[in-house]
Length: 180
Image (cartoon, rainbow, N blue to C red; front, side):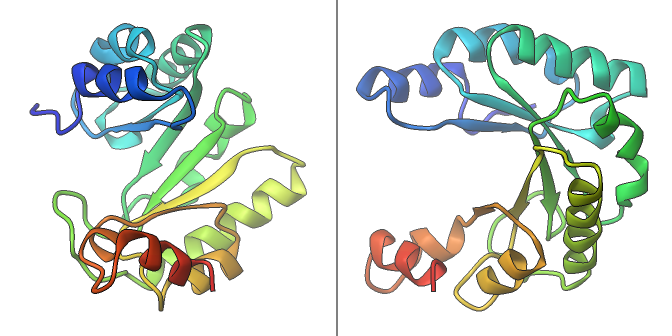
């Protein structure tokens, strides 16, 4: 249950700027433990792991709690989890973001798994057919070769760590490449 960026780091970043958008992905057991502290620290949204929850009721309760604290609520799903597992939860309207992991969770620098594209397309089709405002986030293996694929499949938000921070020129140059 080690946090890479805990509430103290979120607060320190928020204290430097109110313009930073901080979407916090909690890939931990019992994510409900961090809602108040992250809200107080200035997080804009909390995205939690679907697979870390015990029940659909627990998922809905946590999403409502996040929203009640004035933040956007998101749910993240692993590569193995089908979109059909979360559709009923999306229909209750408590989620702003669905984060589709395109790698196995745990560490950076992994290759993008093409199977994620089908999930992005399936979720995008659901969003369109239900006139939903849910945003699709894709996390893992995002680089200058995969960014256009996931955008074409329907992704709205791309999470790119390794590609940006290890870019041969600069973080800004890497960000520009992702937009091409």
